[in-house]
Image (cartoon, helix red, strand yellow):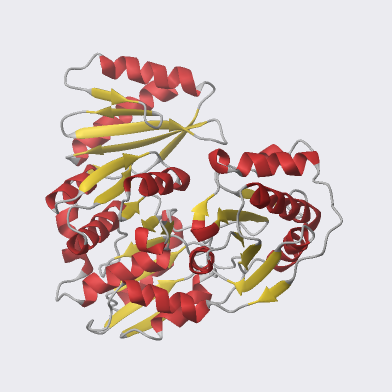
Length: 453
């Protein structure tokens, strides 16, 4: 295997271009390597495999399965699935898993998200480097009896579990627009919402891995425009947007305004703390300062995490946290094997809305206490030098606290900002928050001027 393998193995998953990087030969070798890794870890000898709607996914999953079974391990194929449905299967069956998806990436990409039994994460620091090395070295094909491959449809079991976790039995009727972006929510949402007291207006439910309408990436504002228009046009109570593999969910309120993921983190945290008083909730360091305030106001303990699902999942396991929210639209639930589920986050929002006479914007208003910039990327030649210059500038100010949990975070009395380098590109990512728009604007321009010279 060639040197570009290092580019395919990312921090949390495997991802690359179909045909040139992600090929059936590559996924066969990766399946074989994954089987070796699972044997080293003394994991169960069966792997559950799911796949998204990309045209390449079935063939790639087939080759991966052949690599697994060549080592004497068995495979359960669950077919078309969202990533959180794969995590559900891994958790319910107590088996390691593999999901074939490139999430929100364009059509020419594909990849694999791997997990240990009970949906425990595999990233660079928890096994992915070992698997990468096995692929590089070329795993020996030992003569042994082949494992067997079986199929199992788990969609209804997945829906049963979600509806067991969130009580939606007594909600008022709601009108909800759902934009599946031609991704896997087009498969899972109909199965979930046929059981709810909701009128659904579907946008782009047709499974199509070429993404003919817009990218299945709701963190980019332009991909939410169709949903926003439809919510207003149909006088809907709520809009939901899912990414390609439906593990992330973004909300649009009844006015057509996008909902900051920190507001949804605050809402779910308050609901979960009502069920589990005094529990721990995790938020990542680019979440709004309001999130910690809400956690503490509801009697919980807030823990601040680095950006990235493997960090949050490990911290959840170590701290026995009940919930974790990321500003990227990932929401993690202890009752869902600490895995992230866009559908479960959506159901919490629907339960809050359907159990109240208030609108979504009214429910979320108490959590909207600060002005956020959103993430701003700057191309730099030397990220370290730029960050050092920013730190030096702000360290000279009074009443400023600085930490390096993830990049550089500078905290003032009514403001903060975080500056972190990209793992894969020569970029610095800036997030700024302040009590007022004017203070946020000034701070943002001050930092960007330093970075960009």
